[in-house]
Length: 111
Image 1: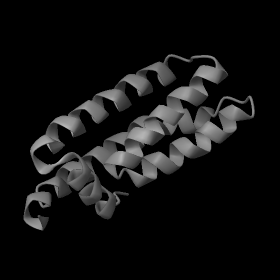
Image 2 (image 1 turned 135 degrees about the horizontal axis):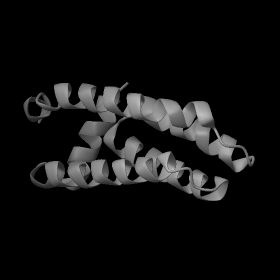
Image 3 (image 1 turned 135 degrees about the vertical axis):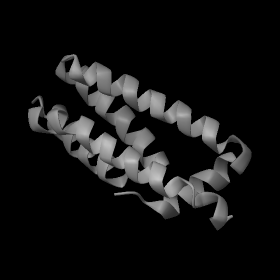
Image 4 (image 1 turned 90 degrees about the vertical axis):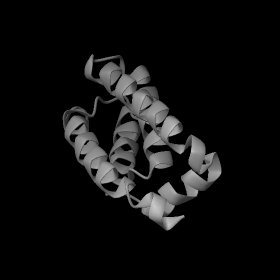
C-alpha cells in the first residue's frame, strides 16, 4: 500500500526539517481534489483531478491510491466516468493515510 522507499526518497528530496510541512500540503491537495471528484465534475475535469491526486499520492508513496487514480484517469480520458473508482477513493485514501501514519514514526529512525 505504501512505497516506503519512495517516502524516504521524498523525505531526502525536501529535507527532513521540511518533510512534515510538505506532507501536510500534499495531503490537503489530495483532500481538495477528492472533494472536487466527489462533487461530480465533468469528465475532462475529472481526469485532471484524478491526475492531481495521483501525482500527490506518488510523491507520498501512496502506491495503491496512485494506481487506482491512474486507472480512473485512463477511464476518464476515454470519456467515461469511472464511478466504481470514484466510490472507492475515500476508503483507499483512508487506508493509505492510516498505513502512512502508522509507519511515519519509523522514518526518523531510518535517517
